[in-house]
Length: 135
Image 1: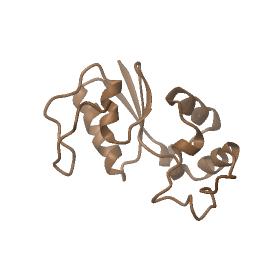
Image 2: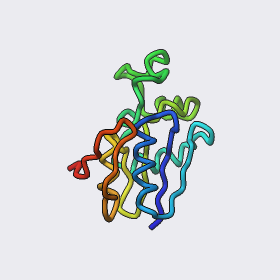
Image 3: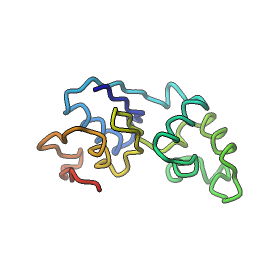
Image 4: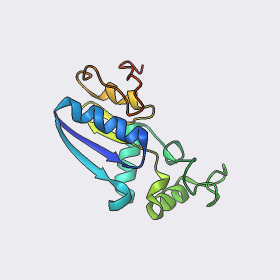
């Protein structure tokens, strides 16, 4: 199984999801999107596969979304995509792709929906236990 995580190493949720994915022992590609940036086709494909709109995927806290006026309901999907291309931090994270699908893994337990089996005995970096059923 091939797994891709669009990861922000400064994000605790993203780090927890990465740790869970690493614990599976499966092949894993880590894309640090703050370094690589996004392309419009890439975002459109990820959002479509995850059943998200750009507004659904917009990071509204700890990002420049408010300052850029992106929280207004009148802002179009195209304008949100343009902003996400210019400011990659605006895309909420982590987004994980596996053969079972694509999901925005917030909360971190959502990642288990994308795996054949949840690794046993995992704890988050704050010491709390993962709850392996997110449904």
